[in-house]
Length: 295
Image 1 (cartoon, rainbow, N blue to C red):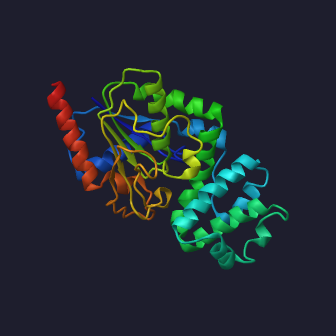
Image 2: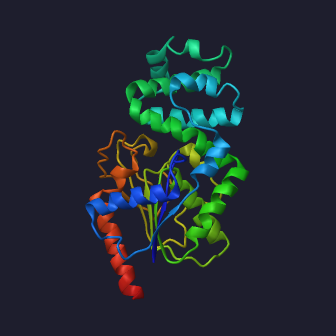
């Protein structure tokens, strides 16, 4: 049995080997020897997606110029994501307009009402939670490319899918990696491919966001090739809306753990997720169970 990691957004500055070492060390630091006798791999797509997305948004201040040539589909995606996150954080449109009145007028082209709304929402979120908002802005561009540009999705999936097809697997996925993994698992189920996933772990997943769900193909349900799906989130992780993935927000049959206390500077950090004790216990129990079953 193999443990397969699938990383999230904006990891192109690191190699697959570097990410594998970092993730493994995070786990081993709190659970020495846990992965000693289990092959561990990193499914890597960062440089592929970076070539299609050409960077990410760094702040609300630069979004006006960054999105000035964006098409309406990308603008609508950015608006939908930011608006849902803003509402979840107590910022409805009237509040955003009140908080940011006049402050963004000089960084958004005149006549672009949708772009002006996007920048105002981003700026209001940034004002309320700067470090958490930065994560959302970094997520937007790469997520949009993966969800809507089919050539990019095929390229990413082609890099990740062969690794998921190895049997049996424990999948540990983070951020956009949870979306990539879910999409591929759906494909494999549709093709009736024979794969065995005893445990699918999602960390800091944006799958509950309406803009993501609307752009995913196929039914929203726990894949039949997955025995157990456990979703971990920090309630302060802005990407997750601080909510379960369940029948109301995504699909039935998903177990949720919202007790993660991500002590890093941002609540979306992979490091804080990997050292969560409940995740460590789940991983240990699953490895031991699979070892006993398969010998």
